[in-house]
Image (cartoon, rainbow, N blue to C red; front, top):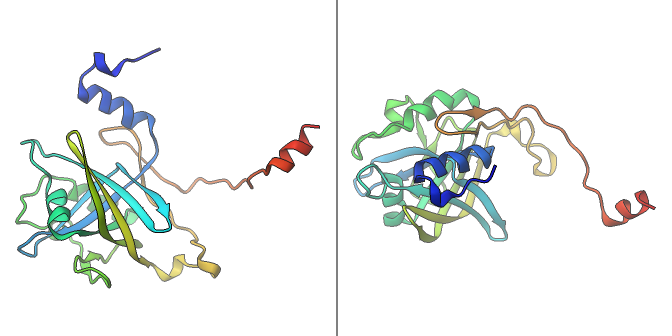
Length: 206
């Protein structure tokens, strides 16, 4: 079946895109407004895009009134944010934080979460998260009704029990986003297959 997005609504095309490009990691973003209120919200238009420098991207849409969401406004104003990774033990709290709380109310309090201080930026992280990435804003690019934020990771926070020799991460199982509006997946079912070099492929096909 061929599906032409120009023949469908934006909502229908969103459903197709977010059900096909899966799984997607969840950026559970803490940001801070000018009054010091810490905002917490999840976004699944998120990924790592570079390692030297360390760049991640988060794409944030508008709210129902067509204005920038609190996260976007805070990042634009302060030039920093924290990406906290979502594992199963904080899933319920993440789901609560997705609600449309007013800008003067912190989702952390509603979700019974605590903040922990960051090192390189002022915005705090989620204390209960097993991994958090402190980010400084590199650039912001408008993309239709979204804003694409490129952040440079300036500090990693990783739970001690996850870090093995040579900084290998063990037994880290973040939740992934599948189809909209509310389908998720676990990342505990894994397999490891070494990459094949061209020389190996060539020798195997002679």
